[in-house]
Length: 213
Image 1 (cartoon, rainbow, N blue to C red):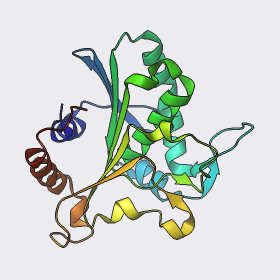
Image 2 (cartoon, rainbow, N blue to C red):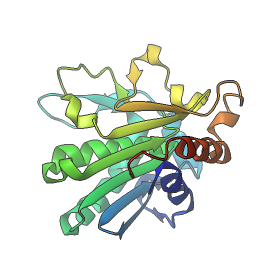
Image 3 (tube, helix red, strand yellow):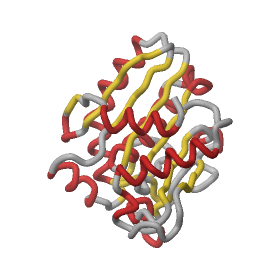
Image 4 (tube, rainbow, N blue to C red):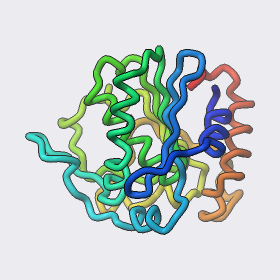
């Protein structure tokens, strides 16, 4: 799949709803395991989105901090992802999500990279219109390789990709890929899925040599 096709799959997947109102979908196609995460779809999701005080990911010697609401949603999904990974024979793993789902995709990517090192060389992650998740992570804590294959896709002017604000010490990780045209949409309209679809189609048409995700 290219970035446009993957985004279409994220929008149309038949999601499974689990604890903490998190939603995911898993399927294997052509040797690739796709782990997809849904955008906000209910009140609990929005409560989690706005629950942005930073807390430790877990009790560990080198503690790192992240958005409390997104972590709560991810913890509802993690046991299911762990079971899928224990059983998969996939040759590639692609993690992706949109908006709220993009935040969960980032946490899923981190979980796979850290807890399942045998998958590091076949792991790719994409967060479409993803908010910031991680809080004040020093570069000495993580090697760059941890995020070498994770991409945050921002439709220019999308307000969600700027939240929580950087002055609260939240940050994006991986590669930030900006698509679309600045000033084409308002900051809210730039986040709408139909406008991501249009901008992604334009991007992949202009960059047909890009490798699949």
